[in-house]
Image (cartoon, rainbow, N blue to C red; front, side, top):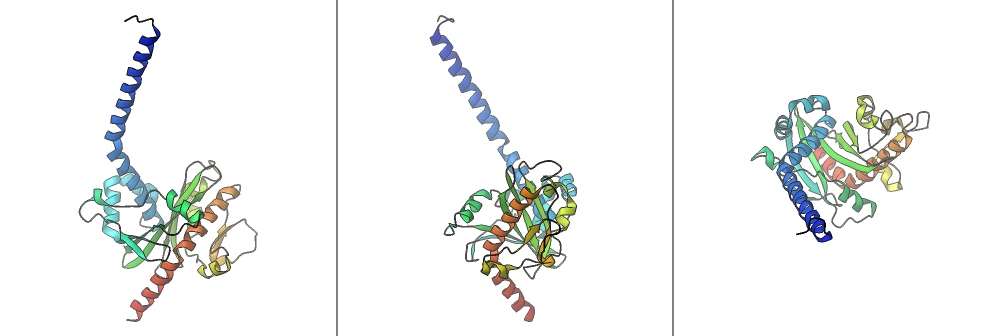
Amino acid sequence: MNTNSNLYTIIYSAIIVTLVAAILAFASQSLKPLQDANEKAETVSQMLTAAHFAEKEELNALGNDAILTKYKENITAAFTINAKGEKVRDLNKGTESLEAIELINNLKPQNDKLKKNDLKTLELPVYVFNQNGKKITVVPVYGAGLWGPVWGYLAFNDDMKTIHGAYFDHASETPGLGAKIKDEPAFRALFDGKTVKFENAAANEDVFHILKAGVARDEACSIDAITGASMTCKGLNGAINNWLKAYIPYFTAAHVESNETTEE
């Protein structure tokens, strides 16, 4: 075949493209188990940080298996709920193996359903931990920041309205400003001990507030926004309120159940 012909060039290019595609597909498939393990450990470490089992840096230093083991040792229940607060299905807690641990990592589909008020197939995760005999419930939040998605986890005490702890992350917020929702432990610490006013939802008001310093507020259910990161904080505020309002039916039922158990 004439190596200078157009036909040769087309065939040669097609072979190269096919080979490269095959190599990339093989590499992607081979690395998928490792990628899945890293993603799972990252999600768990965020939840454990929110629940104050350890700081994120300490957990990262332990390695994936140790992080997942800590989750397995402390998780008492993991399941999803629907818009009515009813349990849909249990998530595997890793009883058989660490690889079997089941999480809801991709929050975007559920966030899209919340935005569209498409509640028929809504499925929200709930994670319940035992922390030295204390029940800690962890739920996720997800929304849009200034440049991309923001998300995180809020941990609640047994009364289902007092925040035990929080952890947040982002895709591409501005370093030194919006990125502080992840990088500044002091910002996350502002959530500790605050309460969520779920009763505000009936009046279509926010149940929690991230506000600029100096703005009038109910101190019990609000914190200061990060200076210079108003759009990121606004997005995070929206994420928290959109998701927590969706959890109200479950939180209400869980609180009643907790009171009944206490009385018994």
